[in-house]
Length: 357
Image (cartoon, rainbow, N blue to C red; front, side, top):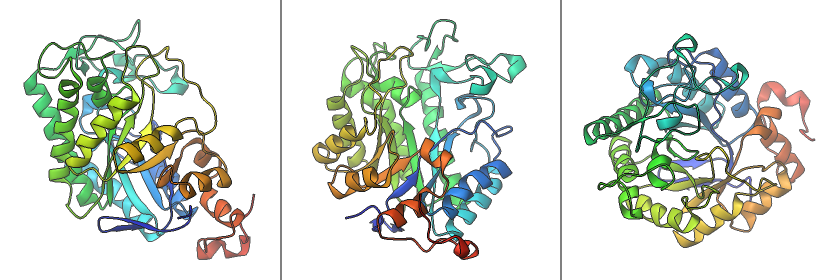
């Protein structure tokens, strides 16, 4: 099993095990994809990635991280995303979409606008929602604790967005359950202080995220893969920990999740994260072994040899790259040449072969 070997999930065959991690572009207007998203994602497909995934795509307007996030809460948003999915498929990549609700981290400004809370003048909104009335940080909006009717509405929004994504031609759907956004907030005792059936014990904290998983799996075509991104640890005392992540993944697998995208952190603004090359790979390996499920590794994976070793040694089945793909859209073409398994590349670029570093 090598980095450039194909693999299958349900009816979908991935041409290789290199994927583009979902990365916010903060470039949409009213949730609609545009030429920036087409070129950004399309360039990575041209560059040989076997899987190309959209940024966090909000299932409701108030579920956006920023006013400039992608969305799929209305049928009119299908067409521009369908254009992107079609182009990705035409290049031989598998088009994927990440479905998200930002929870208490919603309504924030773009990084280059200073970050922090988006005011009405910035296009921000209120209220925002979370499992409990606990803000992400000092000076941030205090979320409204969701009642069960609102939770039902969000579950339905995830399912409706999944149906729209299938109509748009995406072949993989990923549920965003990481980085301090709504589903992760329910999982973590740091953000979830509820005293009802959705808080307290791990079983209770898993209840709402698993309802979302079940609803998306039921709405998403049965022959297409469903992924979930999780934060395997909060990196803070008293937070969500890897053993709890394994327990959650076992339940998600039972409901029809096919692969887990293993990230970490994002829940607490002052978490101490030991960032170094491949620092999250052990989570992918642990979950793969202990939950008996396929995994994707992500986080400071930058070189061809590093990525190849992760796959060859069975630490993960797929490698997702973020910042490195921003730096080098053709990373997969270059890596395949370096590893002696060169991808053919697009025909109009043949005069540039061989692709090398």
